Length: 162
Image 1 (cartoon, rainbow, N blue to C red):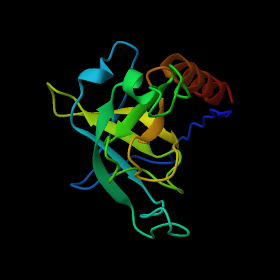
Image 2: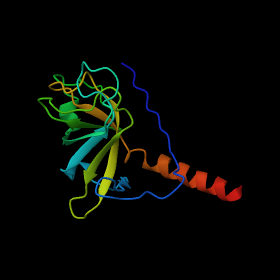
Image 3: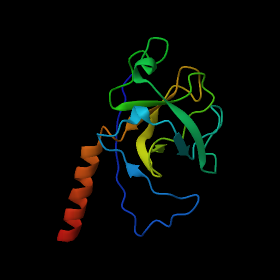
């Protein structure tokens, strides 16, 4: 099975107006020990059940656990399909997961020692939705930190030149 990893960066026209429901999150850098974070959440507009068609019509969020990559890649789970640039999150028994329409949405974890959040992953793929031993697979932002940083800097340099 082939997986394609893509990326996009967006620049907002204005400032983000933070509230009880809207907060900023930091981009996870390579030094962050993601495996030690234990308060993680996913968000998306996708289907709320495997059989549902289309989006939920309402932004959904759910608490998930990060799952060790070795377990996620074991024979009974994804049998080696999970790459080093991926993270696994959900629950071994299923029940809560991202689904169709959630791709590109965030996997966010609260810092263990501070009041801010990290965007540690972007929803990428999975087999079905909320199935046992088939958690969601996320593209690690930490793994692509230098690519993201380079492109942000290149954009700002080009913007200043014009």
